[in-house]
Amino acid sequence: MSFLFEKVDRELNEEELRTLNEYNNGYANTIGMVITACSPECVTAHIDVGPQHLQPAGIVNGGVYAGLAETVGSVAAMATAGRPAVGMNNNTDLLRSVRDGRIEASARPVHVGRRTHLWRIEMHHEGKLVALTNLKLLVP
Image 1 (tube, one colour):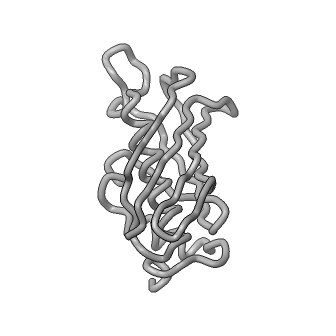
Image 2 (tube, rainbow, N blue to C red):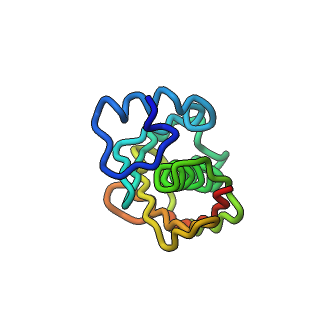
Image 3 (cartoon, rainbow, N blue to C red):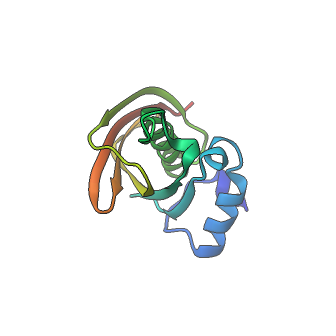
């Protein structure tokens, strides 16, 4: 379990991913996020849309996309830096409505500095881009 607080220099295996998902018991658990891959180049995760994700109009609430992106991006920054990261700016563009199914998120680095990171998180539903986030993080 030591990899949770150390810099990741390779893709995590299935057992490590299972442990990472068990550790992620806060907000990620609340929205049903499952991390599916974690490496220094990319972190991927998904949620299965349920009634708890929907706004009154019956589509996924925009905050779900922003929260999913921030969570995946924070995991990515932590894996890359080997220490916790906190959000400084979350700019999420909502591009397409989703009512059900699976939303898949991929976080890739744009800039990895000593104290700040910028990650681009793309969220897809049925192969179509539905939301895009630029997430700036402080890595203290």
